Image (cartoon, rainbow, N blue to C red):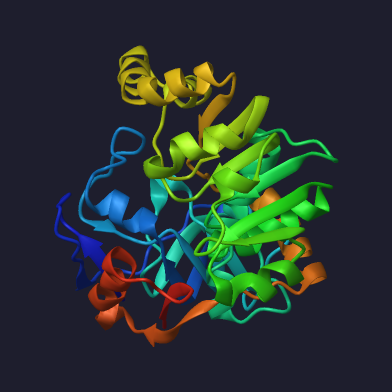
Length: 333
């Protein structure tokens, strides 16, 4: 079978398409024939070695973190799934490899595909859906009646985070481009700020939670709109001491992450705000809940107009790495 692989960490974003054996499955795994796999900024972080302190890999490494496809084979201990079922997954971080014709996946990481989505659309949902779910439930521990602001929330993350936040009873405020206003409001956002005409730091205050999708350049402005005791959760800015402690990393790693995130922790403390960083993990049980939300709200993620084959994987990677994709970039099989 074909698989998109790297042989080392490198600043050059480039994969090789290799012929490799179809994986054997363990008793608690299923073999998925991949129909579609998504490319995320996470791919660049993994390929460059930027997250090797969180998760280091052996080589050759098949890349790709989320996929949708058809059950091809079922392990001896697997119940509830049969050959021919349509499924999707965010792969366990320690065993990625979505950009391949077949993938062996632990049963704990998969869910049935939402009935309203194609393979390509379902492949675009798992990672962002789980990021939104774990961010709202576990990192922010949100409560009904409170407010959340998502700067840059008009993209693929916002498409999942907005309806999920609304289902939890939050007031949802989003900033983004003008073209995405109607779609985002339809998903349930209570207020939408066009970033080209409205500066959120000038019009918002006393927000309970901020979910940052933009990175370090926005950190000060995001802190300025939070109420005292609020929480700032970032997908981009970087890990800190709390992140390392929550994951029970060894002491030397906790020390490194404490040093790396010290500046952000100090800034947050000055504002009496708690800073958190998220690195999403696989969870099939949560993915089943996301499926229900996607179906109930008829969520359909925006996809980049061109579909790429595995042989065009480097072109697809460059769209994500250097371009502005118009939705999630998808490899189809």
